[in-house]
Structures are given as structure tokens and as C-alpha cells.
Image (tube, rainbow, N blue to C red; front, side, top):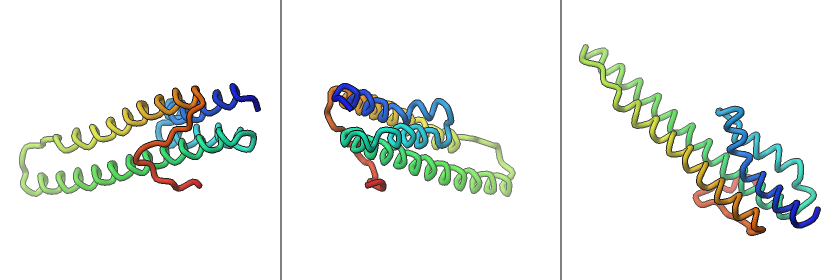
Length: 136
């Protein structure tokens, strides 16, 4: 694979999370990166390296989203039970707070994926901040 193709595939791997999310919001971010990475990982060490970085970042974001939804469900359930027993006015402030955190995760995904894609397009390796390194 020539150098220009390596940079193009490196860019696509980083954008795979965004492309996958557009197709399937639940797990598309991981599947999108995984498919692109698996296609070209054996042809280029650059694409292999950037694919591992991208898949680790997308897995990290998915874990964070699951944790936020879990806390959201627990707090919402406790809130509903407390208000049911007190027979008070319903107020959904806690629901909006946790939904806002999911929006932050989505924005973080867009920002860092685009930055990584731009770096890869220039031929520079990118390491995502705050990313778990599960795929080695």
C-alpha cells in the first residue's frame, strides 16, 4: 500500500466511529471502526496502529455511555419511587442532567475523531486522550 493510501485509510478508520454512529446509534461507532480496521490492518502498520487507537477510543466512549445510562436509570427509578410515595409534583430535572452527559459524550466523539482524522490524513499518528487500551 502506498503512503497516500495509508493516510486515507487511517483517516477513514478514525471517521468510522462517526459513520457507524450515523447508521446504528447503539453500537455503530464500534462496528464502523472495526470493519474499516479489519479490512486494512494487515496491509499497513500505520492503519493497524491508528485502527487500534480508534477502536479503543470508541469502546471507551461506549462504556462511558453505558455507565451514564445505568446511573440515569437508577436515579430516575429512585426519584420516581420517592415521588410516588410522597405523592408530590413530578419534576424531571434529573432526567435532563443525565441526558446532557450523553450529549457531551457525543460531542467529545465528534471533536476527537475529527482531530484524529486530520492528523492521520497528514501522516501523523494520533493517540486519543483518556482512552482505555483494551485492544493491543
